[in-house]
Image 1: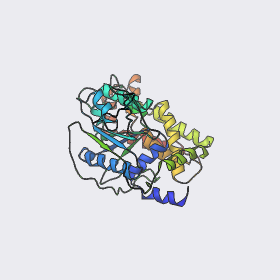
Image 2: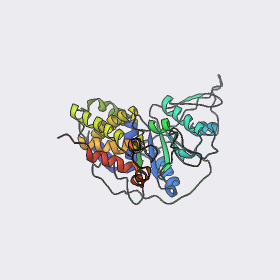
Image 3: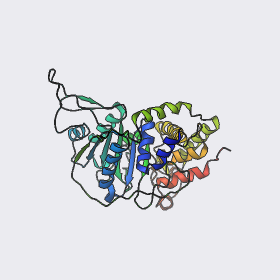
Image 4: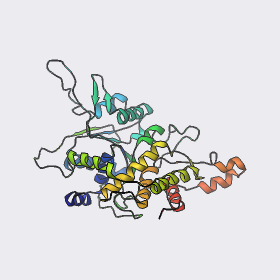
Length: 353
């Protein structure tokens, strides 16, 4: 990594760095923040897309009444006016480079399934055509950091009165980044320490109606700090990152210990294992290394696993099968959070020397 790029990375804030990390991995991102800051953060992401990456950005605020058609039209550029070919009368619009779905966890299951299809197939169907996503495509779910509530009988979808992403959609998000204007995410992407200061300042804002914002790149002739060619070069450089057998075993042990943790009922999938390996290699690249270290695996685990872990209840905790009192189990599980479980596992699994 050249010194100019390293200096650029150091100048990025936590949101821009999370976006860059996910773009390098060709994956998608969850950003959680206090509900009162989501509107301002949505605007910040649009500015980052335009001025840091020179990408187009489309944003939609989801509600329970948002339809699949509303969602599809919102993520396509120039949705207010159809672009037709004069001769063939074809709709040639494309999906924006970066799509921000605010409060996606409040949308209906049909809308969330449509979001999953856009992430997987990189295309969206409207009434007029099938619209493709560009090569550099990122889907961001901008959510409140209020913890989701799952139906304990069927973890594949939330209860009608709760907020949460459906199981498969949640699993396809690469990482979950927690942004707070006062206290930054405890696992900053370029710091292997347990905490770091957040320099972002986000003003309070509210809004509950479905809205659509379309942003285009700046018209300035100056190149963006992170150009598409830079992202392509970083993606190609991932092939040079080495992961030893000991590091692979360490990552495997983390996933195994997490699956067997008494507070975990599920969520640690095969996709999570692939994302853990991918993020560790991206982090090594951003740190200027050509190999993965145990500290980077731990940092990747905090980002990849936290939003996937489904916590056990008194009815699903394993020891109940062998006679544990449900009242005692319920008391033991009170106040337990997914982040705490991940940290407990990281503190338990032996780290390779």
